[in-house]
Length: 580
Image: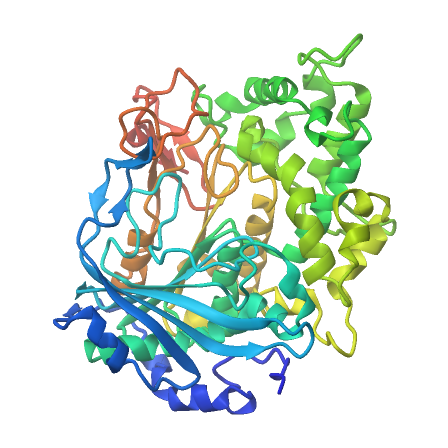
């Protein structure tokens, strides 16, 4: 039997779903609204043997527990980096239990394949009383280690801090492929229903292991994981107190369409059609980055290789005026007029013939020189977006033998943009419905129970524009009568590409300030971020400018504030900058 596909948020529709036996059996996992006032979580311990959890967790409705093992202290490290296959540096994660299981295992009546929401839970022996649901990125399809680590070269994570952490494959076993798009239910699980199925199970596991439900529950992720987080904020507000959304994929189906459209545009100026990167080479991108810095670097009071005042930069920088035009052969020091047309159109974002926007604009930022920026512009449109648009976001799915690789290149934007809203009797829910947050500016359920949202986004993110996060906050603020910052804040990260990397201070702990906001009522007015140069202990960022201190710090400021240099301060120290 197929599950209902209505979009009424869980848990308000528990009784209406075919998975109601599982959810009804776990109704105790739904907290009361009054329970979520500022108060700290209370730690607890698990004194038994991890292997005993196979028996302790038996009989969970709709759930199969397949393994329960002990992970000793130090077997997992937080921070540090890999060098020649060895982990160097970092801090030891405490001993914990690793539990593996599956929810809603089934065989698809459409493609005959086996599906299940596979998951991993890591349960500290010394638990801090909190639950963290880790949203994973991309097309999901694999159960990544449940560590809840975010930020470039992370130095900490949820498990390291003592959370019980859950990770899942979001209902498909495709390991990053998109074949699951043939199954209607797998689409819904990927979009949001896996979270609705897993959350009560995870809470019941915690209750059986520690003798109580979590005092506080958090959801976090970056990219598609950030989208999962915002979906949880709208669909599952009764279950979560804190939302950590990194580079959230607002309207992910349309951003994927925009990626394909951008690839079409790059093809028109590529010197080698087999390599999209020849449309805008590394040397040419460095030339544009220098031009942006020349116009914008000092707008925040410091010429330091970081453009903090992104809004003023968009008014100050002009691609056609500030970047030299080629008068002869392309040599990396200039752009042709045709290249400028293409780059300008991609930064402006795609629009239909009648003026309707398909996706957001992007801000000019020197981080476009980053390898991560190029990956999303020139490689992943063909390697990923073709599959997601054709297999998951279109009803019925495309024949990928025709659409894959360059088959999409002949499709007009109007055609591609119609896919995410298409439905058929077999696929009755459009991608724009099952992938997006429900009424993203109506967060009253989360707000009224004391919930908080902390969002961070790289200004040079090439796939999900930081403008989508800023526009969401503006709309939310308008809907909240100018009071959105009381429960939601957006922290742009200048120079950072998608989730990490780029010429940026991209290493930071966003979990601790979110916990303090939820549990102590202390709103974050800045987050100190660090560079990842030699000797800093984290995974090295090779894209840092040579004249930066390897441990440079900067404050990340809540939008619309900007980090501005305090005259006479140290350019390498966050303390020399004020959020204004």
